[in-house]
Length: 542
Image 1 (cartoon, rainbow, N blue to C red):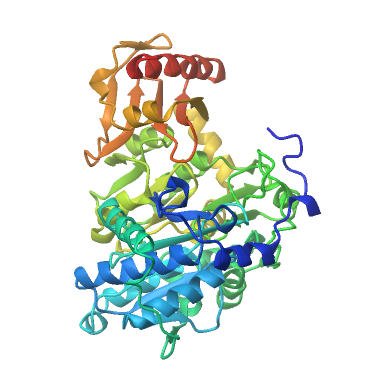
Image 2 (image 1 turned 90 degrees about the vertical axis):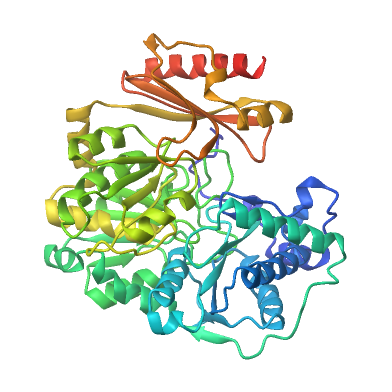
């Protein structure tokens, strides 16, 4: 924990916006350097222009690759494009539009030249493709320009195909490889033109008006509860005001400032500015208002993540809130299919498993990455999909798809519905879950690993683990493939009756991540974490 974590940023912490944007245009990536190549993680290509990892050449190449990919897939409808409030997002959108127009792609940008949250882009894609008349003109897809909650110096660029969610690894691998080829070829095959004939779309009104079909906003209004919403300087700022006005809620936008330096933020645990609504350090200024509202919420820069603050519990652990949301939703959504499953990533809390069992619902456990929930959300076989990093979405009242990307605005509004309908805060409801199912201790830590060890861990088979016990309990499962969809975990998960750990290699550092949980308390969790390093070390050869 950094000594200044949770304190307001000072001038020395802030980026030079002009220098950052200048570097975007002036620095040219060397494709022979791994850190300067296009690389899609779980949610797009990310990096800083100052490190020659997110520059004009990258966006020219990625956008051209997307144009070629969508053409090869037969995607001929409009492309919805939106950007968040990071300083590099606007220049990246300008670059992308040059390439999209030159390739003859029909592009729709925001009608009000406003920032666009990730869920609003997903919503727009699905609305188009679910309309037979619109779909007859060709399937739509989208681009979201955001590095999510990353620090202000970063940029991000991701592609959402016609299913509306994050592109799968087959698509992103093809796009990244082609983009790197284009950079290596001096961008000679990239088409560019002055953007003309670009159409507009009212992302905000289409999204906000449709919320009545997924959230009981009448109940929230009738209850008269006081709601606070902090966009954390992100793309949801105008959306919260529109929601308040459209539905007559007692809702205050706590902070309406948009500042690409994020000078109003408190520093995260490591001393960096990071717009993470699930971090107590990053949310310290928001937490100072907790007594002023019945429900207080935060979102990250593109509003795909949520943070829930209650007067009686403070900032909720994302795992805790997901468990509460699941139990509430499956008791208050009679229009959902009786066989609709509960989706979770395999590093999310086992409290969700116990809630699912008590509901008599099938648990659908998948690898890390929201993309895995997309097919189930589309066909209604998965009614809720959530991950431990405060990202989730769920179905409409009638059991049809809402978004296939994470929706932080939606999960924040759900917290208000829960408070309005039950008369209890989500924190109070989580305490009732603890009384019924136990009190799990959960933590993510890092352990050192060489590049070779990380590569071996990514391909490790559960059968390669020789251990038969973990922290005094027999091991009941050694997973290298997810139980829900049999997809590779990219690591390993080891399970006992009351505890588990999962180990996955970091994509950016010489470490591997250890996620661990114990229903026997913090001391037992420490034992699990220590033995996890030994077990993984033995499997990797030291």
